[in-house]
Image (cartoon, rainbow, N blue to C red):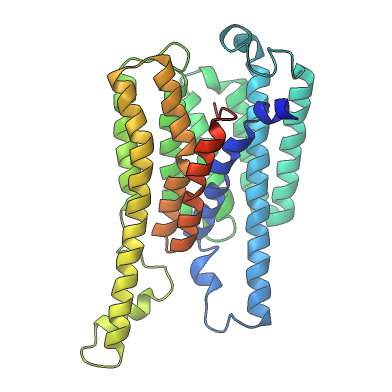
Amino acid sequence: MRDFVELVRAPAALSVPGDVLAGAVAAGGRGPAWSRPGGGGPAGSAGRVGRAVRLGGLAGSSVLLYWAGMAANDWADRRVDAVERPQRPIPSGRVPPAAAFGLSVGLTTAGLVTAGLAGGRRALAVAVPLAGVVWAYDLWAKDTVAGPATMAACRGLDVLLGASTGRPLRAVPAALTVAAHTYTVTALSRREVEGADRRLPAATLAGTAVVAAAAAGGGIGWRGGPGTAGAGGGNRRRGGPGTAGAGGGNRRRVWRALVPAVLAGGYTARYGVAQARVVADPAAERVRAAVGAGITGLPALQGALIARAGATLLGVAVAAAAPLGRRLARKVSPT
């Protein structure tokens, strides 16, 4: 079992559910739709439970497709890994190539079935292209100039999978933000064996700064969260009954702006510093460390996006997966 856990990089899947949650929150699949007045009765509770079950199913589907991609990646790379990474499960003989391929096909099928059961046709409309792009990356695009963009598309579609619970167009900015982050990680990962030219980490570091700014920005101006309209109405009245409520609303807006900024700052500190070290010394070991930081630091970015969309506590909870992912990465490599 340990060999298969290593094959699919099982702990790295901690970075996956946050994609679905970020898409769902941005698209309105959580937040205001779950907290309407009158939603506290049995019907409202049942609706919330149903939405939670659907989101859990979509997150599970995303994890299964992620693991499928990892197994397919190692199956496709088995000859290269025999030279460059002979310790991996397939070239070391611990996992037969046929077993890895069969596992990848089985996980892909399970992921699509789970998406269909959880989200119906709307989810499948995203999950099927997502699975196709995952396989296209592993079998064709990975070693081409289209590699980073193809992997970025995988993560962007993963966010839109969560957005299938609401209005997907609203989640496009979040999907593009996660995709841009993924592009930087994938571009770096192509130099894990030989090391990099300093220009590459300098470019990805600049991209990371843009990604962090996009995730942190707009918190005060966010207009979809519960209570925002009421707070704005209170600001228009002076000395009336709404004044105290306006003060509370202002504090909530400041809090909602602060949390995304802090989470985005944590993401930058972890991933950005690792890339800065590669700029200083672009050796392969430091490139691999930066790639690992990009993978395990993704939940902090996802948490910032979720918090910016109004689900502050959920954003913090998702971001909490980042330190756990770093600890597990010491046991099973995420790359």
